[in-house]
Image (cartoon, rainbow, N blue to C red; front, side, top):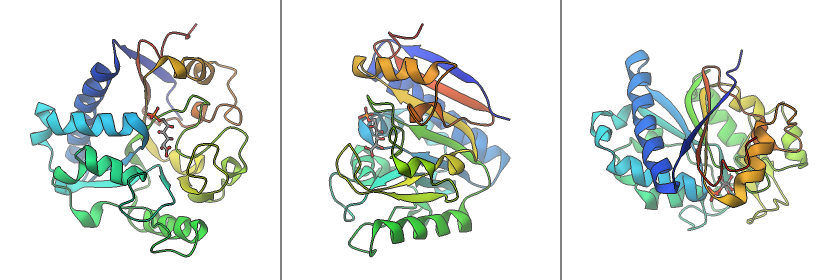
Length: 244
Ligand code: 6PG
């Protein structure tokens, strides 16, 4: 069973990031009361950094035992560790590295400096998920591209269809860089809660398309992931402006 999408609209991008951060901290505290570790998957893009920056400042953050949070990424750009274009580097710079996480529980996707290929990196990431990832993840965050992509699953891209795997290599990405590693729809199905964080008028059409009952994830990948308990679309007013 999956949860139908629920839309929450905030006045602007900063209000969205702040509210999502408060919600994220609450979800982590709640997960830690139910099991030893909270498991979350982060996202890149501007919203991925905005929520981390807000988490650093949110008052409830001090109530989280950050050493009991296991961190993954829904996708990563296949670039060397520390590259400023990597999602994890951008999250670190937004404040992730200052939260007090246990570095052994922060699962980064290997880049070309430590793996032979994006395929090898995806296989290694998948093996780590199988070793440490619970069957069900607590919260998975997504940004959404103007074309409706989530993680590195792009419209009409063959990587979308490799659902026998948990993590896949993505080549010829329409958004640079061309080589990436992404988790699959199959993997995202293991989530209690899936949250889409979307701001900006350039996203309005893809948000409306993803929320349409007729949406096909092949055309609009953001229509695919759903949580077993919640599928939340956390939007600013511009991103929500085309919802019927
Ligand atoms: C990436 C990101 C990507 C991003 C969306 C939305 O690797 O490029 O993971 O999927 O989340 O493109 O980006 P914005 O939040 O910047 O709009």
